[in-house]
Length: 188
Image 1: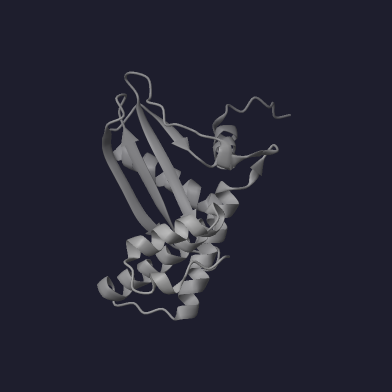
Image 2 (image 1 turned 135 degrees about the vertical axis):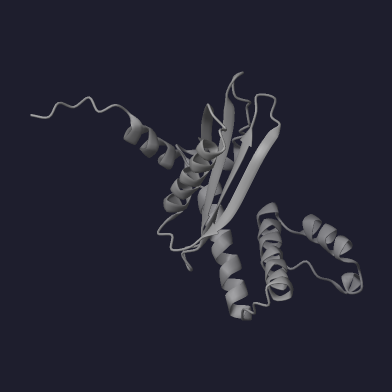
């Protein structure tokens, strides 16, 4: 990673420094810098609001771990086409249906993660959303499945039906669709 520091920036504002870094660094390296700065900011908030104190090694390890997971899930090649160039836009559900967008996250070092969902109507207006931390995860797919489970339970409990569920984890989506397909095999 290139260094975006010079004597002329020594007493500049954060905004000027970040602007200079954005101009000096390649996009990949600037993204890495932003991810690491987010890790420091997250640690700062944990110390102030939750009285938690991690070591500097933990902060770096967690930040790098999140960065690796992000790159693994968002920058990998799919059928020879980089996902970075694929633009997917959200589309509204048909009239009379709601759309539930779910996502799960996973930290392979701690086994912790989070699950999130948003429910929108046919105009795209957000009706409700939710998120919570989860512990004891085994894989990224485990986080995605828990996100589906929690979102569905919420939708059923609060009558947000009929609905379409949408997620970004294609392998989980395929597994769920296979698991819910009618069993056409004959038992002999």
